[in-house]
Image (cartoon, rainbow, N blue to C red):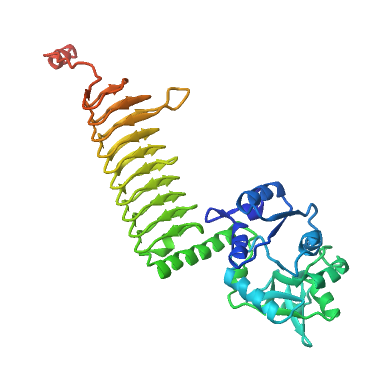
Length: 445
């Protein structure tokens, strides 16, 4: 990957590669999961414990091959009748394929099953050799020229009867071109002891594409993106005129009759409810857009909420648990941070609202700023119901404005304003007559 980051922690649609096979295993019904870690394993272990807390962590301090890894995990897998082995860098495997695989293994009474698929260019993959009613795998570097012509390859995904695997795991040799212990060598050893080995060929090769460089990561991301977008369009009626420009993460939830315009990104645990509209160039991360809300375009939401029938944008930014309640509005070039805007209230344009609580049916004039930072800490601003905040008002926090309060345009408000009052905090205007004429006269030679 040409990176210091462990391969399985590289992001694909803003989730680590490892997330995908683990999620597929869970969705297929596998409750007991172990993760083998090696290179930069502390990082992988930390992420796994945070995101899949039930998973067992097993260390492979020396990378001596897949057979060696299976041996190190024996203390864990010997507690089960069967164990499935998946690749952490193959994120496109589907839960349905894993369920089908497990059913075939059980129905055949197999000692070992593995998934195979056909590739036009199988370079680098272990070849599946079917000879005399038996099946075995030969790694590419150890294969003859004739064997390399075989198109059927091993996916590296197995199910073992654990008793059968325990009987041969110590007999796997490292006498090969890589000097490693190959898990596929267990297949021939199991067959030699009378166990049944089956290669279960899958129809869709893309599910088994591994990731070994940044180009392959980008290709896999596009495939996953297309799956997610098409799923919402087919199952939920998502309307999108340009699906290829829409990027949606695997944890995102979308309701019915949602319209999304081109060039939108939805990440993390974002939720879009029924009949919402998402305009172009919008990026949402871990945010909620409630039913019939309207994001007019070029909106950024981080960890924030847009209420039912509320609207935002264009060119609006909300972050750190900001919230627009029902029918509220934030408009052009508005930033809202860690603030709550009440029902029917408006922040139409060119304003910054930080650490604030705004009541219902209040209008915030253009250029209003909550001056929430005093150089040491953030301070709150509270604005009541039915207020009219004049344009270019500076609210120096901490400050509280009651209900039905107005402020004069251009005011600097440093003290609380009681209910129903007008707050004005600005210098009295003075007009100096003749000033322009005198100024021009002084400039003549």
